[in-house]
Amino acid sequence: MVAISKRAQETQFSPIRKLKPLADEAIKQGKRIYNLNIGQPDVPTPRAFREGLKDVPDVIAYSPSQGLDEAVDAFRRYYRDLGIDLKREELVITTAGSEALLFAFLAVADPGDEILVPEPFYTNYNSYATMASIQLVPLETAPETGFHLPGREAIEQKITERTKAILICNPNNPTGTVYTPEELHTLKEIVLERDLFLISDEVYREFVYDGLAHTSALQLEGLEERAIVCDSISKRFSACGARLGAIASRNPDVMAAALKFAQARLSPPTPEQYGLIRLMRSGEHQREIRRIVEEFARRRDALFEELQQIEGAFCVKPQGAFYAVVRLPIDDAERFCAWLLSEFALEGETVMLAPAQDFYTTPGKGRNEVRIAYVLESGKLRRAMRIVKAALEAYPGRTD
Image 1 (cartoon, rainbow, N blue to C red):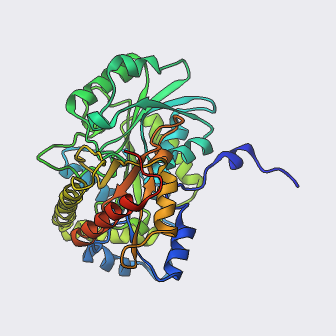
Image 2: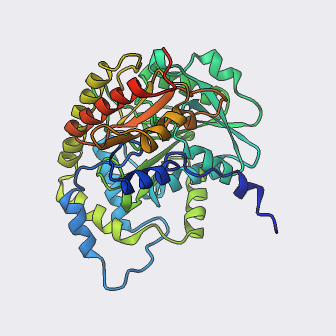
């Protein structure tokens, strides 16, 4: 058989979705599943966005590679509301945040180069890195500190001549960490002194709780040439299927490269841009964001309250996003998550979780941790956690 490329062989299947066959079989057996494995909100997409989809012309044509002017301006208005002024040429609309991240990797790194990233990290970063033929180098963090960044010395020890950038997700998927102004200042000093880029995945920007504030990489003074932000409307507007995002930077070379990549793929999704335009023109976007974030704050609190009732579970209360990495008294998270679907049910119901070791690259890390996406309303979330509690009492691989 003719061999496919090494890149194709090494790109991973999504570990977040790999338990789906077990879930499908569980459903066939009549089980009800609470899906907490993937970041798919269940709150309604704003009405104005959905109505905007009807504005599409009779011919759904290519949009400009950068995006429709009105859609680019809609993104610019959104950023202007945050106190961030961007010129049109400083933003390219992408096919969701995923393409923005891939464009960022391709723009700053050559094959064999390295990008530092706090671990655990969004598992699809691995796929983007493999497609770009670059290496992700993990920065170790710990559950006991809420997965905040290690000290400056620990970060600088990982920098080599092949290092081109530091990548952060703020607020963080999968940990819910919100980086402090002091942490961001440290990163700023490092990238300036070591001639690096700072790539900031800010998809969960608004999902910040307990009175904390988010600082964008685009707001860090002195990083105008080095900050690259990757963004998406998927979470803040509960529009994951719309696949609309953006890459933004004040570095003209980075944005010229992003536009080249955008031209190569021709066009971002056209109908969804009309949805964004209508939503931003309606002036309802800020109210809709508040509605969604307030709901997730309630869910975060419900999840944490239930976790406190599970003996042996450990989790620092998440500060942002809508995920938590939870340490459980189990031998192997992947085995436990599979067992939940294939062998356990409480009154005909079970739960689908994501094994956390898939969010690490360091061997052995996260083996007894799961990522929980608190994307269901609070009542369902509480029920799901009580199922997990009962499952842990019956699980044959429990450790204490």
